Length: 226
Ligand SMILES: *Cc1c(COP(=O)(O)O)cnc(C)c1O
Image (cartoon, rainbow, N blue to C red; front, side, top):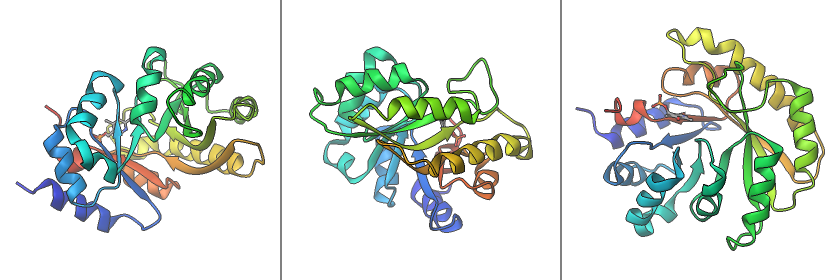
């Protein structure tokens, strides 16, 4: 069996330097997370604020400060206060309402400015969160977020549909990249789009080809989830 550290290093060597490898740690033990951090991981992503991320955060103790924590799963309104104590970046903002709820709670969490990404539902799936993949929709959301002084929109994130063949996801990644390019050119307060987070174990190569500069990998590093 190839060790976690080895898999992580191999992947890190494989991907271009300007692409950030976020390690998706849902359902992985604190020990596994420790191993990947020791191997040099610098960004981890969790899906569930409570109790999962909170528990691991506590158990990891000082090791947790060696990495940036990203929330990559849906954020429930009643988890926002906790999320703001755990996560450096919230990748799953899907509405102005959610952005506003976060903004309102930032100072109480002892922070000043929280980076967030907008989640794009690139294949318009009923089962997924995110805005429709339309520039008008994104633009009006960013325009409203521009008034929120305790968040800064730093990127876009998409999951895309589940596919058997990675080629099938290409049009959705391409669409999201188009939105990213247009959003990057905007000059709005509290908006400084620089990260495009897309691609998982089965699809990260296509995502990089289509312009992702952050990929989110779990299975490729830890093996299949049980
Ligand atoms: C689980 C998950 C990943 C990683 O998926 P793998 O297929 O295990 O690499 C990435 N992003 C999100 C949002 C996830 O929930």
